[in-house]
Image 1 (cartoon, rainbow, N blue to C red):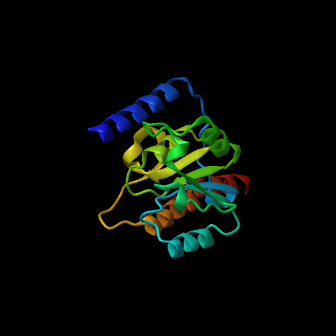
Image 2 (cartoon, rainbow, N blue to C red; image 1 turned 180 degrees about the vertical axis):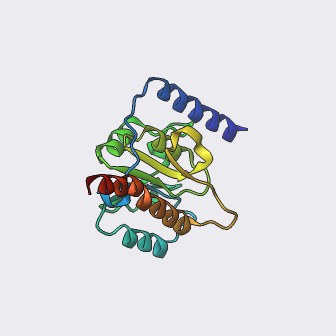
Image 3 (cartoon, rainbow, N blue to C red; image 1 turned 120 degrees about the vertical axis):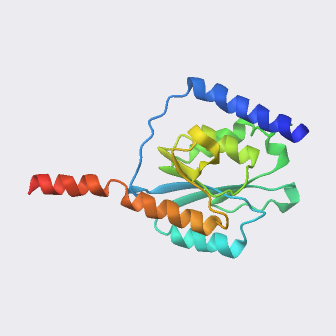
Length: 182
């Protein structure tokens, strides 16, 4: 029951935020992306897979965010931030200093690789000031570019699909522009 209350509270906070928030969302071609915010589930994404993901994003500046259950598991690096329970309130909304830190990395896109709902990360997803938010379609309006989940989909497959579709975005427009110039 308390989990349901937390979810309703986060959803309410997000809807309240979205009533007043104006964004300039923009669908970018993958080659134009310079900085990426990555949200992931540390409990399902193994470290070797995370390394593969960082390798796929080579050439882009990446800041990854995840959640840990206890402070003792918190081992941040220069490009991985870990939220622990003392960094969100009782109903799992991240505290203001976390939000400031999160939005201080001015990324072009946010890629949410979480396969299940993690409330603090869902809130970060919603408050992000990036031009384009990508992830699974479960969040509705807060995700600009969403992928439908297939039964056996994992984080790597989701990332591959996002990169694939973002690579072909605007290619038709560019092709038409070239044809018009010629």
